[in-house]
Image (cartoon, rainbow, N blue to C red; front, side, top):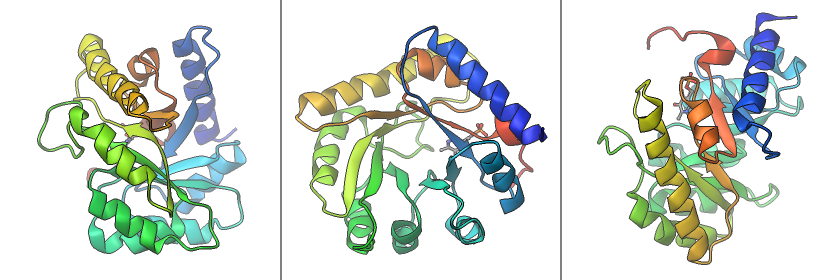
Amino acid sequence: MSPTAENLQAVRRRIVEALQGVGREVVLVAVSKTRPASRVAEALEAGQRDFGENYVQEALGKIAALEGRGAVWHFIGHLQGNKAKDVARHFDWVHGVDRLETAERLSRHRPADRPPLEVCVQVNISEEDTKGGVAPEAAPALAKAVAALPGLRFRGLMGMASPTADEAVQRAQFRRLALALEAVRAAGVPADTLSMGMSHDFPAALAEGATMVRIGTAIFGEREPA
Ligand SMILES: *Cc1c(COP(=O)(O)O)cnc(C)c1O
């Protein structure tokens, strides 16, 4: 078994443990930013389907190299307006939408022969200025506007907790995202996705109701500093 396959198996086992018998579907997004296509291919061979990428240019090469292999591509980075066209054409999901203008651009550029782009609105749950995302109170209005765009399918919310090892803090921040999703639904917008949890905090995210976790380091090893 490749090290990638072994790590994937260990992460999947930890996800099941963290769910503590709750029979919820959880999608594991393997975050493959900075990794070559050969590592993604190893993960595909180990049965992994969903991959997260942060850098458009880098991702396009991998998407082309692995075409036809059944990978589902998630854009999880900060989306610059001038890259919206490439993302709308080549990705399946976008997790970081925090402006209506970006969503409109994605919708406009989504090719008519592809299903709508699956979209999560990003919410700032850590109260750090450096992280993107709308304030939790703004999530229902943006969700409603995104859900109305023809090229997109609104799925739910994405958030990132502070880089802390304190599980109580992680859980309190993830709970904010779960509550914001409840507010979105209460506003009449259907949603099924809570995209939260990374290598160091996914057990806390799962305890607070994550349906999708985005994990890089625990699968592919430490990244080279950028
Ligand atoms: C890089 C990244 C991840 C994965 O982080 P790891 O610590 O490697 O698991 C998850 N989500 C986003 C938005 C990222 O940028």
